[in-house]
Amino acid sequence: MTNEQLLEFGWGLADSGYAFIWNIRPDLVRGETAVMPPEFLASVHGRAMLTTWCPQAEVLRHEAVGAFLTHSGIRMELHAREHLRRRADLCWPFAGEQQTNCRYKHTEWGIGVEIGAEVKRAEVAAMIREAMVGEKGRVMKRRGAEWKEKALRASLPGGAAEANLDEVIRNVLLAKYNAPAKNQSFN
View 1 (cartoon, rainbow, N blue to C red):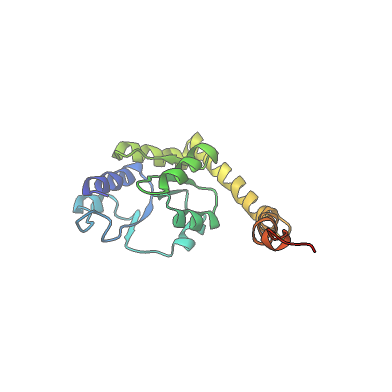
View 2: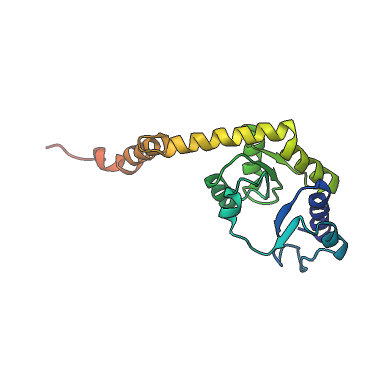
């Protein structure tokens, strides 16, 4: 991201009024080191934790997490779905499959909202507040809980995941062994 986008996200988080954890990798800003200004740090003192790393699985699993800001990359999505709870996803996709993952979360699954390409602090703050206490946030959290329940049922023995894997094995992997060979003579 650019330094301007970093600042817009940061001030949006600050202006939301909520406590937050924000992982800011040193290489997050294109061509620069990611650094937040002292006035930002003063404004979030006591309600923010800025890190370069955290145990993401533990954080996502915690009941206090009400919203999750993500780029929606596939590795992140698989990891986040593993720890689905009642929370809303704020998506800011910028490359590869991230746009598709974000679209599904927003339009198909009802568990996320998309932050526009031009990040604006007021928009970020409003989305966080909506995700935390607004009607859309309540719906996204309810839908997240429903999807978690579906995923758990599908992964049980005899569930949809096992049935689908069995079908792939039967119809794809074993099909060539069960079909007669081409030009096979039956003399």
